[in-house]
Image (cartoon, rainbow, N blue to C red):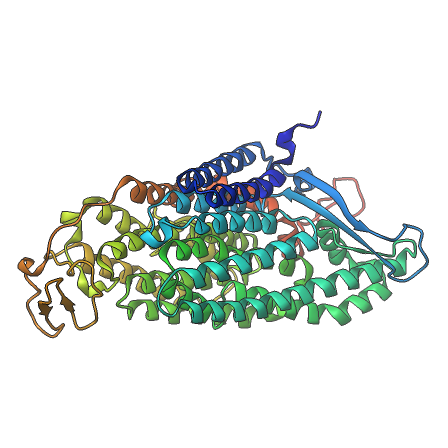
Length: 582
């Protein structure tokens, strides 16, 4: 008997959308507190259902090592205008609203629900707290991201991708720094370019697979958009017949380049990352946390879903160059992070550097590299998001993110010091923190593939040293905090409410005395510390119990890994022809 729980991916898409509508209705009729509480309750319920979906998921493989088809799948005929026995040629459509979950999409769905719940539950700047538009947009974002990751058809996937881009454009341009509108336009430009390439690549894939299938079976003439069928057929096109192989090898390089470049922009892979560093610098802290939790997943997810299983020949040919570029980007962005004097920019550059590490793991084209990259991708949805929320709490108190403005904060603000220290160290790759297990998988894969390990390890050490150095400057040593309520510039100049000016230079040997501090502010409250702890707990779990996540990920990576694995030798039983192993 079919139950409601068999359609959990559909519920995860529909529930936030219903919550956004109800939140907007209550806000319109003047019940803003009820609207905000409704949005938070909706996010908590969505997270609970996502965890239930993870508990119900079966990650066992079949006897031949294949993963099961997408589970908890809901398929509704959306648009079909050609009969199955139509004459030859592409004459119709076969579009279905199909949602489901497999090992590759399970944890992105769960962590998306987690980050949305954390952001809506956190304390935000006054301008965002007073506006229910933020809750409505975040719930719409949750619905679009769930649609993107749960889609089992090309059209819902494309709709989810465009929904995520559109909502982030509004979130970036509505709240943030003085240059937020320019950054929103920059983000829209990059995302439009990446999205256009992805849509062109997917459209070419649909047309190519449908046309080649029509050559084999003239009765199948409707354009096929079902993702599992497209990927399975795309893997077989080069072996079905000589005719199909010729057609596929003619179009595959162009489809590969379109999908590779489109998802590389969204990853963001080096050197296509400027939109990311600009976003985290100017967007509001909760928006930056959402970007870390959702946007950083999309690119690698697309590579694992489409590029790896469909284009093995092209991937093998391009892997040495793209792997070297990723390691170079990791080293360069790690050094750029060291040069930052802005806490949020440091986290943004460190996250971008770790993205290059997961890209390097992907281009090893191995099971360990794919699993390590996907696992690090999950960690990047939690640790940077927690760091952005904590830095936002600091910025809300002091109106500055300048690293030189703070010192000895852990002694007076122990909860802030503990949480911020854990968040920054999670980005450093230190043992038992954040993506430590993912680092081991990636380094092992890079070493096994003969990659540039001599560059990778020093880059990881420099990033770890940078995080520790920043923590030493901000959390330890002599206590120092800026004057409250004013921008803390690089020259360390602040103006008190009565017009008095307090200034000192970084060239001075003595730090400003505590007498120049107007007062002390309270430590982190419950709405600031609870979301950060929730995110950091997941990040820690990725290292303490990585097999729980890796086992599920590998069940979803079978199609991606299979083209690159050498089949084991066939053992011939004694008495058979040959009588020995082949």
